[in-house]
Amino acid sequence: MVVNGVSKAQSAVTRIASNVCVIEFTDSSQLGFTRTSTGTGTFIWKAGKDTSSLFLVTNKHCLPKFGQATTILLKVRSTSTSSVGKIIPFAVFESNSKISSKVRFADNGEDVAVIDVSTLYPSIGKEFVPSNILLATKDTLKKYEIGLGKDIFFLGFPSVFYDKRNYSPILRSGIIATDPTQDFYYNSNLVDETAKRFKYVLPEKLNGFLIDASAFGGSSGRLVFVKPQPFEQREGNRAIPTIPLPFILGILTESHNDIGSDSTVAMRLNLGGVISAEIIKNTIDDFFAKIHHTK
Image (tube, rainbow, N blue to C red):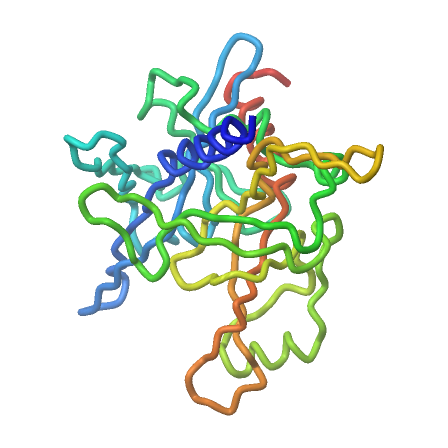
């Protein structure tokens, strides 16, 4: 029983890893200077009553702004030992300079982008991560007691570090550092110092929570999953809820530096900001309804 439980948890992580890809574009907006930008995206499958769609979930800031580039490259992992990964171009802007109708951003301005990539994979099957099951709501967190100190993992490509043949993502881990059922409000001193030292403006509120993990550049766009606990635990006669699946808790949007350091080099705090999975879920559900005219 223990072996089966471990096997199921490991197979779930392996399945997720096969659905993570590099998002890359070359910014040539500066005359005489080009810069390659990379991020992470995860394929998520949503099924309705009679239809389904495949979406790529990432951060809004992982996509080019108009004038930087019109197309992104999706470097998709190969799951076969005999073949290499695939590079798939995807146009994020229409010919009239408008953002593609296949791209949707979170309605509330959060750093979340959902891309309809169903035409890239016309045969949608169970190999893709199912949104209906894995995207965690606040009720999910409460039901399975997913809170402070719970183990998490995320898959992606830190600092452009990836296998150039297979585009296989790197698994990293950490713990939930603040209450995931409550939004996190940045204090004014942190906001002011971050803007002054790193030229980056923190929002007043993060609609999500913090994780204690190695969240470095290139980590943007990575989904954060809770580590499954497939075994039932008991205290006396009281059963403690297990975590049967690697529920998606949110999307990593930023990493934080030590503003108290005197060094000219930014020192990482190993704290990352995560936008709640409910925002991802709402964005996917609204986009799905629009595509399939279910509202």
